[in-house]
Length: 311
Image 1 (cartoon, rainbow, N blue to C red):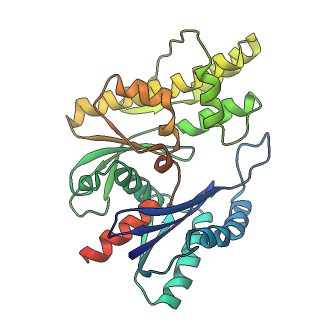
Image 2: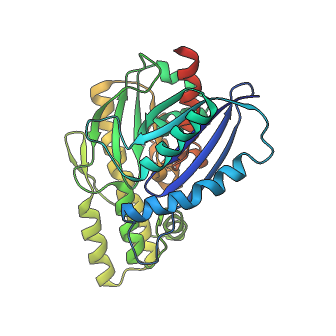
Image 3: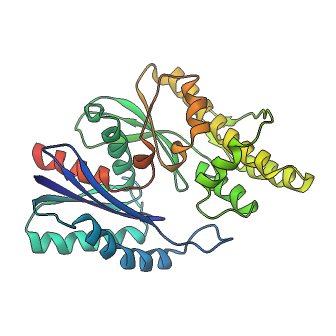
């Protein structure tokens, strides 16, 4: 077994992954950071603390019975590959990766969290070939709602933002409405189950400015519906439909501009079945498998393998 280690300490998930380059399989371990009921997130100081607490547990689990050699390490260092992109929580994984590099004497490769998401999505659907082809990659989560043009020239996910949210991220909208309904943060999975129980037909219109979207209006409408006494299932369905309409609208306008490129959807929000079904009814699109759509270190492990073998 020839293994590559991936580490990702994002805003809400600690994750470790071992990628076996010979079999193409991964050993993936991840754990959500704890958030108190009724709260919409964590302070970065708390996120850093919890990552420190959780990393050793995940390493113990991932390396249980592991006997192979680590060839290289991949780690996420920032949310995006943009100047000034920074979150303290990523310094935890980076610090651990640098310590391991000094002990193991192996190469260390740094990638953005977003690059890791794209690579994990492509790995999960056996389409790593798209790393070398131009395509559109959506990254839709609580921290990001962006459509990226991946140039495919160098295999290391060089991107340009072609569309984005102008206010709330899709995951923020879902979480805020979920917390309004008393659900546990992050609310996506619970809200989806509640939404699927709604039998009413809901019509929504996305707010778009060019290829960009605006999502804060969805929160305002949900607050109005809550005061009117609409059912929790209705509000949950509304949240998912509103997010879906924005992503569909962005996709339509991007396709008009950039043509028939492959469209890949990743990020925690894209694991929602309602949103995926809406997109699939309109486009020929690719989705990360749900377990690789949420924050995970598989992408950084796979990119470390690619970087190590192409450098």
